[in-house]
Length: 272
Image (spheres, rainbow, N blue to C red):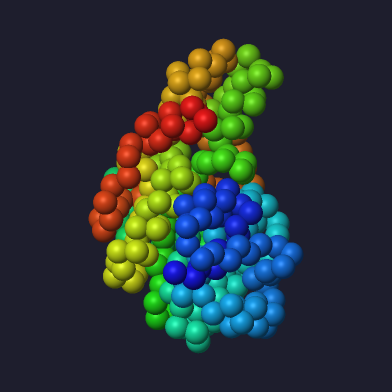
């Protein structure tokens, strides 16, 4: 199987490269592969003729998107539509990743694959646009919504908490945002299974099993690693950000086998 992995240098991209190491993979990232230059990208991809394109590239700075709106929509929105057209023209399957932030967070029980996006912030809006353009322009696609990623080779909440524990004696952590912590290693393995099993094309939710608040996640990190820090449970209102975050961004998986519980995945990550 010949695959092109875009965003290969990112946290998820690195996990995907490792998972597909036995396949015929081409790794792509800036500056050589620029999603904002569709004509150049089309020439490159046409010459490579991959059977599968995995797009793990994105503008993921949620607060940064509020001020860099044009670039955010270009990378997370328009570029996805351009990539979908390229994939369709060469008959390739396109795997694209979206986010829990396409939902407004008002549903405490979480969101199914069939629920309609209603994003609260620019990042979520740009990802929702990418979803729409993907579905409009690609025939063979897997749209994978995931959430709260952590893994090796990139900035994530777990590493931030551990680093801050070495600097501070106490730290406020938000207690009113809920989601599904997801290990990139587990997600990458799930993507490989989707492709190899030739699952029906469409939208899928894939996260580690279970949900928690950021505060509960911090407490679990403290418990596993024996951190000497006092976490203070606090509301989002006391720690304002440029971008509004959804309260409940829990993704319900109705279509794929469940991944292991997030607590188990976290312990695995912290052991390495």
